[in-house]
Amino acid sequence: MKQVVLDTETTGLEVEQGHRVIEIGALELIDRVATGRRFHHYINPGREVEAGALEVHGISNEFLADKPAFDEVADTFLDFIRGSELIIHNASFDLGFLDFELELLGRDSTRIEHQVSVLDTLALARELHPGQRNSLDALCRRYAIDNSHRSLHGALLDAEILADVYLAMTGGQTDLGLSLDLPDSNDTDARFVTGEDVEIRVINASAEEFELHQQRLRQIEKSSDNNCLWLEQAERE
Figure 1 (cartoon, rainbow, N blue to C red):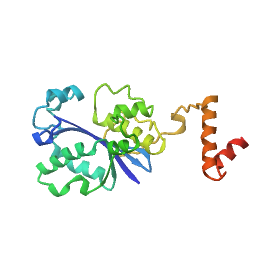
Figure 2 (tube, rainbow, N blue to C red):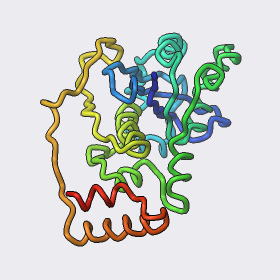
Figure 3 (cartoon, rainbow, N blue to C red):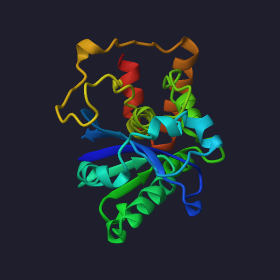
Figure 4 (cartoon, rainbow, N blue to C red):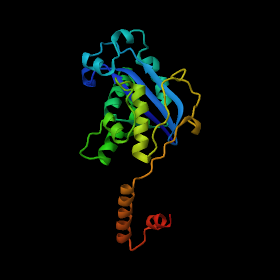
């Protein structure tokens, strides 16, 4: 299963006001494992970055002046996401901007959601945690994911953090061991995290936590006609 975790940065918040994409960051997962393949480009939007947006991501007009226009990276980007499920936090925002860029190129029929499936992690988080804050920062705190290096927003950095958040929300796997030091953002050589690269911590339950767990198992046993396999296993141990 191919998934692509994606984020963008833009000149402003409202695509209806003609704001444009200035950075795309994406990384590939195959069967929930990072392959090392990434797509990362800064893009010259042909317009100025709003002051409010600059405070969020720190990407200045001067920095973007010599970067390629969207039409120069569009085909490479579409090739990268082809055949995947996109994982995006607040997907309507990013897709709205990307579709607008394609529309400006006269490629209205190339709307992203017509080519790939999309999973919105914001919608997923709201289902899992109704009534709670579900921003990317809030989810990092909830799932104990380190985002201390995120002083400013950045498309590739946020995609890496989102990958950890998504895996934690959907299966408990966290910390892909991702970093920003690959030699080239379009490098197609797969790199995997091995057991030697990761320090594994074992945290044992306290006596109080164990007793609460046992109480829960006994409740399950009572409601399942004394048929709780977890309790039988715990008692054997």
